[in-house]
Image 1 (cartoon, helix red, strand yellow):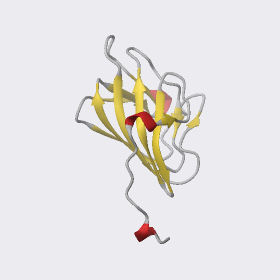
Image 2 (spheres, one colour; image 1 turned 60 degrees about the vertical axis):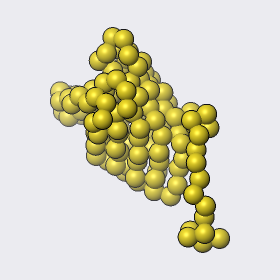
Image 3 (cartoon, helix red, strand yellow; image 1 turned 30 degrees about the vertical axis):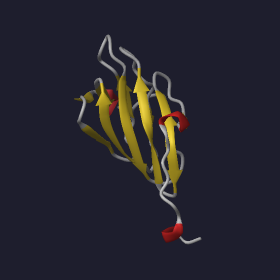
Length: 128
């Protein structure tokens, strides 16, 4: 079967599987294909993830619900925040952590990653 002959498939919400863990967040995988990873991430109200990066993967997040804050940069001193309808881009190798600044609402974002190797590498923290 050639790539052109492969069927289009649907991954239903109930078919998502647990993804690579990082403390403070729950990732679910929709599918993986050569060079591509797709899924969702849920972060509980007030939670902050552990520090991590995504190796050679470029990462796109589309915030569906709630708010997401990403800390990054030297010593974790920089941050951006996004809400429903916003996209975030995390360059390959960028050490960061995610948090949900809302005290009440879980945040959910759709993730797409392009790259090779392990999609998540947990680390102690960002370089100074």
